[in-house]
Every structure is written in structure tokens, then in C-alpha cells.
Length: 413
Image (cartoon, rainbow, N blue to C red; front, top):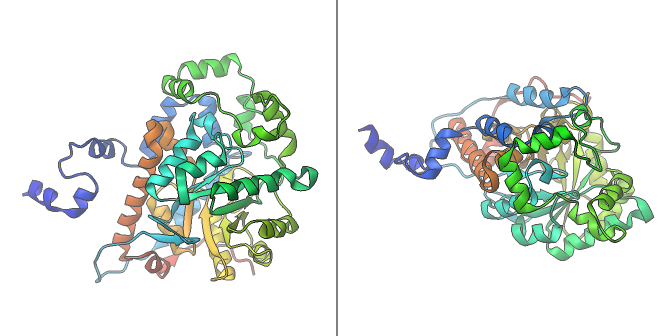
């Protein structure tokens, strides 16, 4: 009887669990959570690269604070109106399969060679946004071709010559068909990341006997490197004195990228960019007001995943106040700490219209290679559907109406 129920259950079929023999079903049984994927990735990625992925800044206090704060958010289920759930959301005119996206990660190819192209391809297939970074390992033109309408582009500040490179990158993004531009605010200076310093992971990167041994002990990563080639800052190569070697490009990045923008430059971006404009890294309602005054369409609440300032609040703890201040004047987005579909549900319930994750998707690549990003997208969506079903919230709007308890919420009054 149990077997008959499993075969007849639409939910079981949706999970690929009908017979338990399909490759996807077996993979779900072996790697049902991101924690399982992380353990597998740790074995396949060189130590220096895994430290770069996992670490924050300083003593990693902010990364832990993000996790503890998300875990502390409680949502109260409602019953009596069972039915199917719908995770779709429209973000800046594009219909997405779920309020889940891939965050930008600088030098993502160190963690898994070929990561940028894999992310772009997975985003297009899964119908979720991917914010390709200034320091991605494929060009914005390549990303736009692979991700289609789900391609977004993140900018760091390059202030030399009155932001000449910054605005050329904006033109390139527009010509490539990118829909959304995300300007990063929360990296005004370089942070101190002790794990990277101990591993010698600095720009330009110089291999040591220890890092060479790390690579030799990570055959899957080494095979990916042989396939994808040495990671490089592909978006920067056209701005470097020829020949655009890895050393020359790394030197350009080290000297030119300053990481943030003034509000005046954000206003100039607004004038130069016809698509949707998002500012990434807002943590205070007054900064959200400044962003609105500059003409932005979206505000991405983020503490850079805990990688910039160890004393910063957990991003989820400032989200409700920013969402309340902004209201319907802009689209509120969230990242920093998302590791499950339940985390996505928490962020939506506290005021976000969409969420982004970087580490989660990189762990997918580390654990499963090229198919990993798509696997994580499916896992997060499935977990979100389960959370919504348990909560009695058939839509994202219903999630936002739930009663919740959030003891850590910041009071900016």
C-alpha cells in the first residue's frame, strides 16, 4: 500500500521519488540538504579555495551572526485552506520561477573553474536571476548569451578618469541585453580576511608548495581547471595595457577597483542606464532613502555575506525596517546567509521580494561540478515549496502576511 501511495502522489513524482531509482532521486537521497553538499565539496575543492568560499572577514563573526539570526526567525503556520503553492515572482518585468537568485562572487573560478559560465547556464535553464560580477571569470557578453533575460550585472567602482571604465562596463551590459544593473555599495575599502592571508590568496596570486599540494590532492578541481582554463578577470582584459596577461590584469584590478560609489555617481548611473538599477549592500533605512532619491528601482539588503565588516548586524535583522521605510517605492531584495528554502521563506515573510545566495551555489559546483548550480536551484525551490505548504501560504504574497516573531529585528528609532 505504501508503494501504491508513493506512485500515485503528485508530490512524490515532483520530487523524483516515485520509484527511488532515477538518478535525480538517488542524488536527492544522498545529498538532501546543502550541508550534505558542503561536506562533499570540502573533499573536492583545494583547502585554500574552500577557505576563500567559507570565510568572512576578521574572526568570521558576521558570517555566524547571519546564520544565527536567520535561524531565530519564527513563522506561524495557518491551516484550513490546503492547496498548491506558486513560487513564481516577477522581478523588473521578467517572470522568474522562484524568488531565488545567484549572487555575484568575485574570482568565482578559484573556487570552481568555469563557475561564471556554469552559473549563467544554470540560471537560464532554471529561470532565476544571476548577478554576474565585475570580477567574474567570463565576460558579461558571454553571461548574457547564456542566461538570457535572467542576466544581471554587478559593478564595483573604478573611479579613475571620472569612472571611464565604470561607464564603459554599463554600455557593454546594455549592448549585451542585460536587464538589471546592481551597483555595490558595501565594499568601501578592502577587508582583512585572515584565512586568505594565511593561504597566500592575494592579488596577484602566487602559488606556493602548500597550495600546489592542495591542488594535487583535489583531482576533481584539477580536472575542472584543465577543462575551463586558468581563472582570469575576463571583464577587465580590454582595459589593460597589452598584452593582457593574468599578471597585468590582476595588477589593474588591485590598483583601480575601489569597490563603492557616491550617491552622485549612482545618479549618473541612473541617467546612463535605461534598465532597472539596483544598489547592493544597503543596511540602514536612511541609506535606502538616499538610494530612492537617486532614482533606483531596487534595494538589495546585504552585508556582503559577512565578508566586509565583522561588527555589522545580520542582514536579516535590518531587512524589516528597510522594507517598511521603502514600502512600494522600490523592489526589496535580500542576500547574506541563505542556505535553504526555509531561509528564503523567512526573508520573503520579512519584506523581500527576492533573495540571492552565493556560497550555496558555489558549494553546488564544488560538490557536483557543472550540474551543481542547477541542483541547488532545484533544492532551494523544492524546500521553499515545502515551507509554503507547511505554512499554509499558497503564494509569496501570503508568505508576507504571516505572523512572525523576530526578536533580533533592528529598531532604528
